[in-house]
Length: 411
Ligand SMILES: Cc1cc2nc3c(=O)[nH]c(=O)nc-3n(C[C@H](O)[C@H](O)[C@H](O)COP(=O)(O)OP(=O)(O)OC[C@H]3O[C@@H](n4cnc5c(N)ncnc54)[C@H](O)[C@@H]3O)c2cc1C
Image (cartoon, rainbow, N blue to C red; front, top):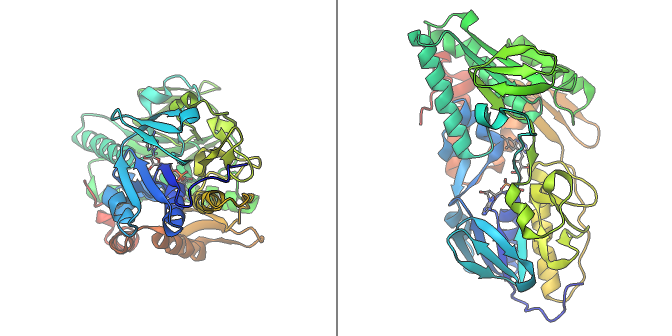
């Protein structure tokens, strides 16, 4: 149990300003806690739309939002832009990469997860992750560079291989295939259809594992219709600078390899001295705090609760709110409540007018209705009115504007 002598206005340090950290911050600030919000970036990133940045429909600024603007509503919230490098749980101190330390009564760890290279030889050196706004901008630059080289004849091909058939891989492959079919023939007339391709590699015999078989099959069909070469049931053995090599020895030529295989906790989490579980996540109780240090709470992708949850935005949002409420309760000497996840459904898009959606009550949607829901939900979840408007306008431009300008964002 958390001690009952805690101050009613506790000092709370939240590390990580993603879905979980920001929702914890709001809950705590409204409840009168003194909050320090720490993130290594001065902005929060809306990861679900990063692939739109990588494929040139959105700019990085459309999917990021300044932390100081989030915090400005709350007089008792301070922002620190720094990376957490260490935790001294016994002393209740967090050490930051600028050499300073922060003391806390309660700590919320919400630093998310990162790319999992799965110990595959050559993966880290020869493929591109898509986990941050920087990753997405770098990938866009690389795709543009390869296309320019192919157009100028300095490189014969512009083949893209996407590894991983989860939502990120499916969305990336779908967006790239649409560009290849609709816009590249107009903007890069020098590149013939045989010089470019999009391939999706997945070790299961289906894409989108968490979805019902009917929706998985629909998504795979929609990708094939867009010209994506589907390598299902294929395991990646290694990644080379110009190829992806499969376990059966097949060599897939690749000028740009996109790594969308899965996620794991960053290595640094191992230094915190807290028990780690599945994928390196920090093991927490049902109330989302650490058994050995009840004043430390973990929310979002980094948490490993007794009942595993999908690593998605909704669990992060709900865990963040729950953690905020539990800290306020603990500070007032009230008992902690277990976290209960309310599944609001999941969705993924394959491209223009094509998405799949499933709700926990069994309802499923696909095609245009699911795609309209996908746009509505993503635009509504963005932070900031300006971002919502620019994303909506850019979506309309990408999907219904002139074909030549589908990837019109260059910076
Ligand atoms: C490409 C992509 C597409 C996705 N698409 C979807 C989707 O369509 N739908 C969906 O529901 N989910 C999607 N997800 C998953 C979803 O984005 C995550 O589940 C969610 O962001 C997790 O929230 P979080 O708060 O735990 O972590 P994050 O949102 O990752 O936030 C973590 C924060 O911690 C900061 N941080 C990390 N380490 C440190 C440190 N040491 N010190 C200080 N700060 C640190 C980071 O800068 C970041 O701001 C997608 C993820 C990716 C990568």
